Image (spheres, rainbow, N blue to C red):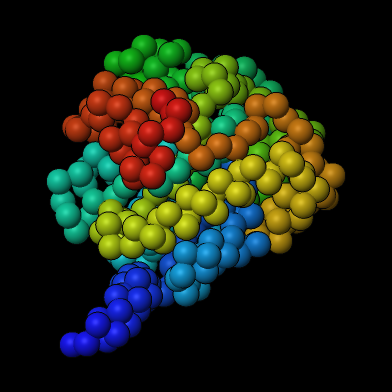
Length: 335
């Protein structure tokens, strides 16, 4: 090979490597988010095509396929069936799945980022219910996913605080699986189909606007400011697509920073992506709530892990939060 030929090959090599790496990454990413305001960073990414934007900047050609799914069991089933690559999920549901599938390569999952911090409320339509002790055998409490959703687990945490850790599941028999939109309709319909709903904004706040609905507790009273939802992925997908994960984290950072910087635009993204029908002013009220914030690094998820380990819900308890998440955010200031 002549010297000129060698120079041509060497000059072309970086471009060839870049093209090879780009071809190695998937061209379609399948994602999902729930309906509540705490999923807003994912909705912003969806609405503004931020994953496509950052993937393009990294030399990747990516399209996205989005779904709206509520309830830990439904989301986990879709992930395990290979129908989802990246999803938003309540932090306890993710930790449970991470632990159960930790040593199963075909089913293992990995955390990608935190989503929103804020509070869920347990609301009721029965005037006589003031505390958890007032719920009886004939009552029904709606949660998006029985035992697996964030709402179900924080209800257990509240019960443990009220009745003792040995009785953490005392109200589990009263729970029924309903999405937040369906639970709002059932709780406010006047048919007494439900006695309570552990819900997130805007559903929890909208419920209190109806006559006869009042709040029993807020999770902020139990846990303080803590990450409610996280983004997670099939580990085999994350391992096979590291540059897409880089692009996704960049998209998350941009989305999370953009929300407080322009709440009006964020409210528009919420209404378009969520499909929820409500006045924009009401969405802005939610974004003005100091309890509702957004950050890519998760905060306080070890509280859930400790509780789930204490109750035997998980067998493998992580030693630190970063053990459960991709390296791209593992060095950040999370907890």
